[in-house]
Length: 566
Image 1 (tube, rainbow, N blue to C red):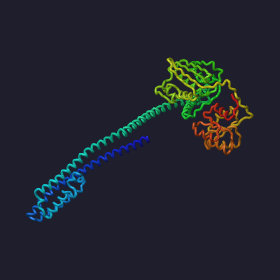
Image 2 (spheres, helix red, strand yellow; image 1 turned 90 degrees about the vertical axis):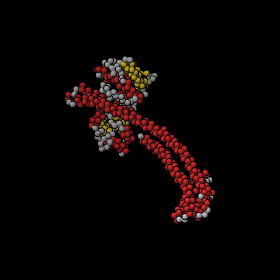
Image 3 (spheres, one colour; image 1 turned 30 degrees about the vertical axis):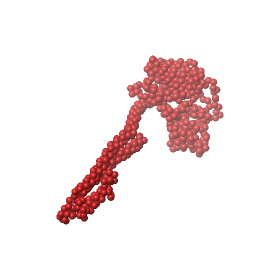
Image 4 (tube, rainbow, N blue to C red; image 1 turned 90 degrees about the horizontal axis):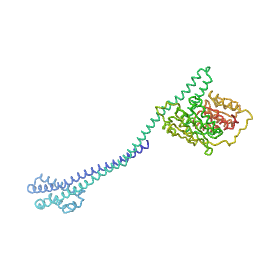
């Protein structure tokens, strides 16, 4: 917008300058013509006055011959002086530079000499023949010729100026035309285009605001539903049954799944989403996908699985993300149909890929929802957004994760139902040799640096599962004191803590204490800058909250502190 404003200002100043120049030129020319006509009229008037003065001088001269009165002498002197002054003025004017006029009256011309002699004789009274008869008529005739020549010269100027004035008008019209087509019309188009873009941006912003409101409303519902379930079931701990515990666990998993979906979308948009490969039987992956749905009696009897030949197939791929994609596609199929959902899974060793077909017999997913999901965006229908559970991020994630894994996810709307086809790259690991980590010669010791008691308890329980002896510290200051007094094989360091945060504590452990104990950052933050700060300070690996056994196991394997555990 600033560039457009600057561009408009420059073009406007240029157009205004050209228009001002044209107007100034036209006004100046009109003033010049007016002054010239006024000057020419004055000269012609003075030239005509010379004839009258010549006659007046002749009259006073003749009267003085009969009656030499003082009044007549004064009037004669005044008329003679006026005649000579006018004569000198005419000779000096620019109109008398024209050849036609100068041939009649110029310095030392016959008429010039006659006029000066006429004035001299009028004063001295010599040669009275000049003031009557043929000599006087001849003088008046020559003066009349001068006036006629001046009038013709003035008429020529007016005719010339009349031809120039339309030319100036044409120049002004052409200037305005050029300014319109070369300046104002392009500017008008550019402003119109900019306004169209702004209207489109406003429409997009309005739509985004509406989607945001719908999304927040839907997310809040999906978050509060499991939270209410957890709080309601645990309100009276003494009455909690094993079934209630299982429901609480399911609520917690749903809550974590919703939060994880939003974090995954953010990581995908920022380019920080990574795949982590592992090796396990394909049948295990398929069973893990079906497990939560088979716990639901409404869904369990409707799922039909056809994949007997994959029982002995072991593959290397990101099984967690594969389960996430399959689970989302299967969930969509179960939601959009009341009948059976058929799953067929095959492994193609030559192409090194898994092919999974999920067929349902319902109405299928709306085309607009599919198109929005392919673009990693959200499409909300205000009439349908509350019909189904979930925050409608799963399908977008499924497409995005599949693209990241270099696989393919395709939906085909059939005459009766929908067919979802997933092609997922996977390496056959049946021929790979299993590498065993060496056993331990002693029990390992770990330090947990965490200010939150619940997080500390969860992490302690997980670490103790790997036969670690565990100490704890509530901030970086206490952690430095513990490391000085004890030897640790591993330090689990939270980033955000009071007194001294995990990044500063890691830096001091490396620089001041000269300790090379593996440090594993444990954080719920998605701030990549802070995480990189911790790694530069000396951390060896990162564990993201919520803390999972697999995450801790992978981090311990990364720093080579884990033997083979079931």
